[in-house]
Amino acid sequence: MEERLPEEPLVIMPVEEIGQYGGTWHRAWMGRADAAGPSRITTERLIRFSRDMKRILPNIAKSWEISEGGKVFTFHLRKGMKWSDGVPFTADDFLFWYEDIILNDELTPAKPVWLKTGGELGKVEKVDDYTIRFRFTKPHGLFLKYLAGPQGHGIAYNPKHYLKQFHPRYTPVEKLEEMAKKEGFKFWYQLFQAKNDRWMNPDLPVITPWKTKTPATEDPFVLERNPYFWKVDPEGNQLPYIDRISHRLVENPDMINFKAMTGELDMQFRHILYTNYPLLMSGREKGNYRVFKYTDDFETNMAIGINLNNKDPVLRKIVQDKRFRIAMSLAMNREEINELCYLGMCKEPRQVAPLPESPYYTKWAEKLAYEYLEYNPQKANELLDEMGLKWDKDHKYRLRPDGKVLALTIEFTPAFGPWADALELIKEYWEAVGVKTAVKSEERSLFYTRKNAADHDVAVWTGAAGMQTVLGPRWYLPYSSESLHAVLYALWYNTGGKSGVEPKGDLRKTLELYDRIKATTDEGEQIQLWDEIMRLNAENLWVLGTLSSPPLIGVVKNNFRNIAEHGIYTWIGHSPGSLDPEQFFIKQK
Image (tube, rainbow, N blue to C red; front, side, top):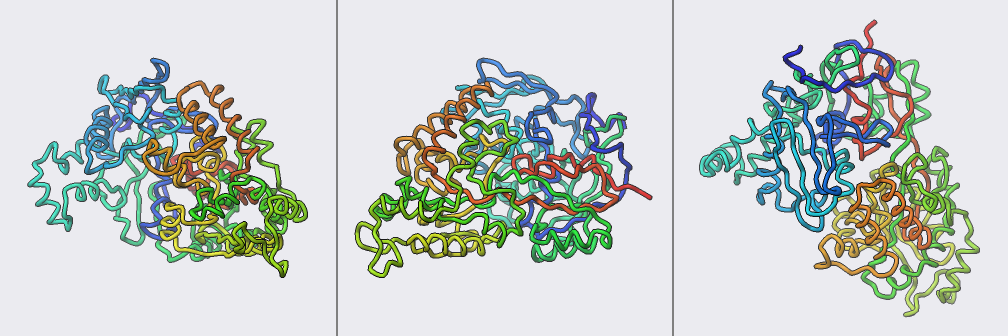
């Protein structure tokens, strides 16, 4: 075993006890489009967040230093660490990722934003075989968080010794094009990407706890133990404990929930519907499982983005008036939505704000979380009257200044809970105060196309990052195309003013504050600046929240151990990867 482990393996503390080796972890998935399922349980990064998402811990890197005022980051790797085929894992693999993948315009035409400061791409340097250095032209205050989050997910998955045979820097491009054609591809980079697909290529070496045994197109899709995995338990036993993971292919989430109820799944949160909670609870004894409830990292289950960049100039002026947004918030009966649509499982009505457990839950964040939540249609009507939005002659709908009926369409994709039912209630509430409302369910690609073009009146999505909110601030500032209330402002921000619409006033201030957050590595200063962003949000209510997210439900067999009953389930940490699945084990009788 000493030959398989690095000199300083990472020690993982088990949740309950030292585990037992063996067994198969049975799961279900819906095919390649559901690849986030296996990805989340086999995720490794240079550094990682703690299970509670509050601290950054060593992972592939055993230590690091920050120098030159946050412009230089030096990481020390684990000497003797190996890929799953036994070949040493070294700084050369990071250089390959940077020089041959990131800098190659055919493989990476758009360079990662998180790897830039001041619009300029950072550099990666090899100090020695087990030391790498990232160098930026300006301080990069969020770099460590990016590496520990989703952005850092792929940088350690590129084995140079295997992939270089498919790259034109090491193999003549003419030969690569021939190889590509034989495998059904037109260009060399398509071949490279296929060979670098860890779900379809069992030959690709990995550093994850389990590696692909059968391609993802087969059923079951099986992962097996990595014999060179570089983590151990406190007694020095090499992890993972579990031999293999088997994913059975199903057509829809209902089939996954059925398999959970009948005891066919060992441990699964993904696609387990909280609306099935009563049924899951009643089936525990027969199915020989437990039901766990985790806190969802999303700040709210359903955030409502009223498009401040609406292409209708009259409607745009109306929705940019914060009195309108406040009125729409006061018009909603959130308690009724909770009872009728969520089985009463949402803890409370809530605007979009960081979770109370988050280091970014500041004084102003708390104020934002609980403002304008009461069901008060009388006050909503008063605000709309104050705006001069008069009723039509039948007192059914309000009129715009141009005499047209004031109407909004809410667009959504049915992917994250009982949104269709909840939005039908919201339609009733908004129409009760005179705003004609249509609800439109869309296939996901159409939804993305329309919201990316800012063609929507109102669009709905989940919250983003309730714990490490600064990594997913799409609802608090015009951050990305996921900022559904401010898509064109975000486009302006992300193109350096070349496209989109320039934001003014307080929205512009949020971007300036966020740029200052990105320019300091002092977390205390970052939190102070974030509190100012929260103040601007509380004073403007750019986005409407509905309810706190219902708990995420997991089904765990009684003999599946080392998983806590309660915790945070987060996309930033790729849960359940954040729970250290390599220390899960199946208890033998």
